[in-house]
Length: 151
Ligand code: GTP
Ligand code: MG
Image 1 (cartoon, rainbow, N blue to C red):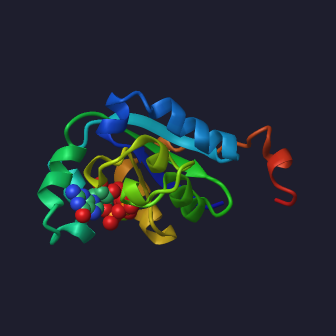
Image 2: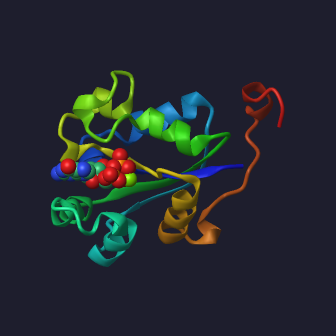
């Protein structure tokens, strides 16, 4: 099954939003495969956001993301990359629909509380960057047959 990398950014951790963010993915029916709290190094974040290195906001983004613990997670399920992005909402919270995480909990694009992989291939890269294989659990949820019509 498909996996995506979701993170609660340092502002989300500080604001007590780990629980609400996890709840939305759990309630939707996605399955948690890995989770840890980590304060990422500058080098790690420069790799994670390497596609954005030429942007004017890049130094601020790296400082923000390294300013405290991040809750790093792997979530699994059908179409979880695309649906995970929908659960997060638009990058700029002012454009995020109410009912999305950013649309409910954020205002500023530079403090948008969560991250989600934007494609299946970037999800694979990000999961490999943030997690060792042995940190990722493969398990069958007891709810599986109540969430999916067909495996
Ligand atoms: P992530 O899930 O964090 O990757 O966000 P995204 O995929 O919705 O957006 P993108 O990858 O383009 O940008 C990464 C992050 O950089 C965003 O989530 C914002 O925190 C930040 N960012 C993006 N655009 C801007 C901007 O114009 N100004 C500032 N200050 N930050 C920005
Ligand atoms: Mg992105």
